[in-house]
Amino acid sequence: MSKDYKKDFIYDEILYASLIDTLLVPEGLSFYTDDENFIQVGSWNYEKDKILDLHYHLEFPRTSYKTNETVLVIKGKILCNLHKENGEFLTSFEIRENQMVTQFNGAHEYKILEDSIAIEVKNGPYFGPEKDRRRIEPKKN
Image (tube, rainbow, N blue to C red; front, side, top):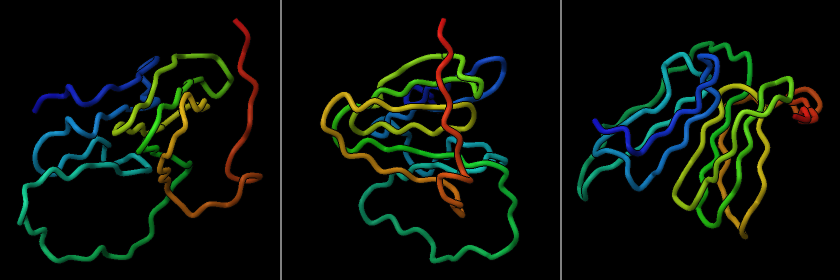
C-alpha cells in the first residue's frame, strides 16, 4: 500500500502529528493510527453498493491519559505550527481542503490562512479548558 497520502511528523523518535490527504487514501478500510493511540483515525474508500456488516461496539473501560485531536479541513487553508510541550518550535505545515491532521504529542497552534470550515474530533470525555489544556508561550530562537 502506497503511503503517498500520509506524512508523519516525527522528532526525537516521537510521533507528533500525521497529515493525511483524504482524496488519495487507498481503497478499502485504512487506519492511520496505531492501536495504542488515544485516538483512532481511519478512512473508508469503497465503491457504490458496498455494504459494511451490521455491528455495534462493546462497552468496556478504557484509560486515556491525554487528549489527541484530528482536524479535517472542509474548505480553506490552515497553518499548523508544531512545538514541543516546552514551547520549542518543531515545524509548520499547511492543512488544505480535503486534508486532515491528527495530533498525538506536543503542542500545536493553528492560524487560519483563508476563510475556512474544519471539523475537529478528539477523544473524551472533555473536562473543560481549565483542566484539559495548558496554554504556553512559544520559545524564541
